[in-house]
Image (cartoon, rainbow, N blue to C red; front, top):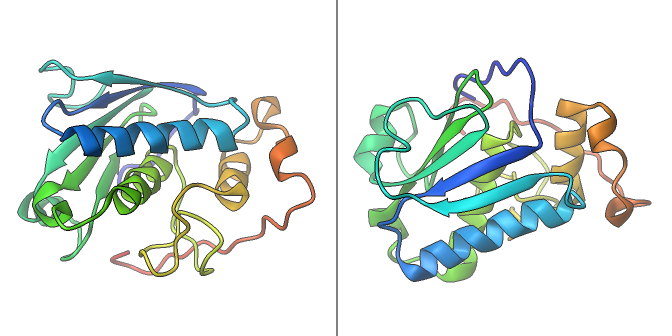
Length: 187
């Protein structure tokens, strides 16, 4: 992940959504936000705000996740591979900018859009891609990703963040939460 040298992670984030997202895409984003809060047993607090302009110009403030509408050319210019359906740039101040290529998303249904938002939110929280098919939203691609974050995705947050704030989630108790980080370039 680009720029992912967080010194400390927070539990409370403001998620600023680009006001040019369609109503359906905004609903998908809100569903993804809710799913991350639920799988964390509400230890993560992601407060959604519809942007009004200017809040996400330049580097986002600490503990802020900016979600921008974008296009494929912009994503590729930032280092994303051709065909990416989303791109996240993490900052050193526990903030991130997410780019969703709207021109590519036109053909996606609401479940697929929710998966894209949930996957990119995972990156903004520090999660990496995983190798195993069908066990988490952090698998790179629709054919192997779950539509929403799972206990495996939550376990990656726990492993990354540690500490008392991310104690074992009762929702995930007894489930297999093993995973392998996929460090393949271009994913």
